[in-house]
Length: 126
Image 1: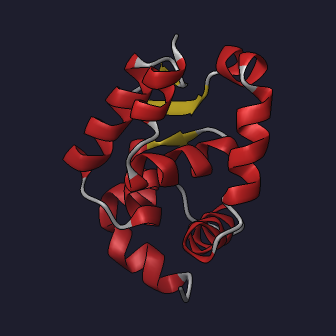
Image 2 (image 1 turned 45 degrees about the horizontal axis):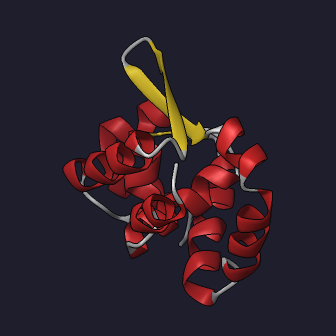
């Protein structure tokens, strides 16, 4: 993969926000949608771009598809990951991580998000 391709894949604010979340661990589409307040088609389009460039990987579990940062990408681009992690401390990206943390520390699951993500996120007091 060429450097230009990596930067093209990360050259969108929403893809950067998604990548930031996935650096924290595996998430399904509905979790990403809810945390970032984006619609499903938008999230899927961005995930497909990141996946096609091999920055992330997907695994299917029943009806859910879970995404994570590709370990091979992380291994081959450790300096870039370190740089991004440092830059993700910006306010906008930190807010996403606060929402992720609140969700992960709650009693809610992906099933709850699929039923009513607005109610779930409102109950997290964010």
